[in-house]
Amino acid sequence: MRKVVISLAPVAAGTPVDAVKLAEDVEKSVAAGAAMCHLHCRMPDGSLTPDTSYMITCFEEILKRTDVVVQASTGGVSEMNIRERCNPLDYEKVESASLNGGSTNLGENVYINSFDDIRYCADAVYRRHILPETEVFDIGMLHNMKLVAEEQPFAEPQLFNLVFGHKGGMQPTPEMLAAFRSFVPRDALWGVTHFGRDNWTFLAAAIAMGATVVRIGFEDSAYLEEGRMAEYNYQVVEKLVTLIRAMGLEPATPMEAREILHLQRRGGCADA
Image (cartoon, rainbow, N blue to C red; front, top):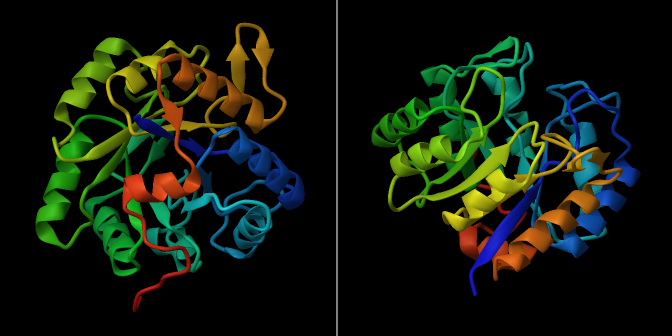
């Protein structure tokens, strides 16, 4: 039976983060069917920072409770340079990390990811044997990654996260999903994020089209149904699991996700 990897991004931008409460929510989310946890490097007040100490505290609290796949973000709109954004990669338990595929308008902000930034991050994850999940906000970014992969060593198979719903980017319509999906390399894995999600039909379409990973969680949306928001992330995961099972599929466990995504054992670190 086909398995779908549920990636949980549990922290909404700019909101305070309590490591213990977060870990309890992630634990319940994994019990419900999530396999991966995606965190930015934040201070307890929710602001982005190059200091990895509180991100590590959060992941350590989470890992006391569950064997979830650890995914660190190298993104987010901030004043940090790419070297500072890649600081989380030095946490030895990171198994996967975001790799942004280019620059875009992200809401009212300009989200800058130059080719030098892309190359630096791609090299950093490659040398650490961390799986890059390439975040792509428009079709041209797929071409960006093709160029980078021709210039330097890169993980195979590639994993793309097709991001929809941001003001200034691709919008979550079946037509845009079909167009975007048609340009993903044939031998690559892919998944979706629906930022600002106010319905579940787009995620259902992506799963039906073969998405390997579906990202969910408060970083993107707390919407459960019309007029109702989730109080905890695990409620959003439960909703997605119900959808997946209604389609005759199953959510992947953390260990199954590692097999599907060809992840290195957690804690492995190269000569970076």
